[in-house]
Image (cartoon, rainbow, N blue to C red):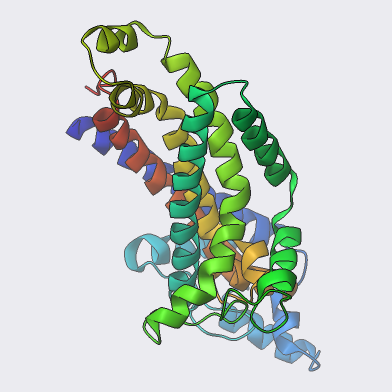
Length: 320
């Protein structure tokens, strides 16, 4: 197991280098706008622009810029400075990280719990009315865009504009350290919106995986031993059917941690996704590069954690 983890970590470092190189080439070699001109604003004087290019290091050869960028990342985790605000990109991302983590992890708890529960119930009673109703509802939720669902939830339930004011604090994010109660209430609607489509996917996947798993020989053996049906389903069937769930869970959490743009914009949550959106509108390339790299880091770490979890949740999986 230790050798496998080391190989995966080395693979992750290599992948991060590739992502860093790709984003650097995209925004430095093929830029859509000149950062020096953007920083100069109305002072479009060639001397001012040349001085800004020198301060930003844009007058150096491309390979030199890339070496400085990579050395800063891997030696000091220095992601550069914002073209728009001149603030360190690392500081901007760390200041927004807690809001995004709160949104994604809370939503993951909701969609994982509800999706697995609905999937297990549907798998135990396939083609029943309950199964058809739950799978039909899942299909509707999968088809609903997050921004539309978020706006609908705000209009219906938010404390300031909602028709049914049952979620106080929705639409106005409060940090956890400022007020834990208001933090929780301000995230209820965002959690439900993030969880809606994901829970639907997990329910359908869990249903199909559990139906297939329940026909395995070891399930029949467990029943022959006289175990209760509940124990057979939850301890043996669900444990063997959860591998596909873990795979997409790691990807979903990793992607959302780096790019929860739609939900954060709709609910005005100051997270990494909203920071990335603002950076794109201002052509602030260092922030976009930093958020892309952070998203890749989250995905790599999530996949390593999922691979390790396989060996503990599924006795059939062993790493050498």
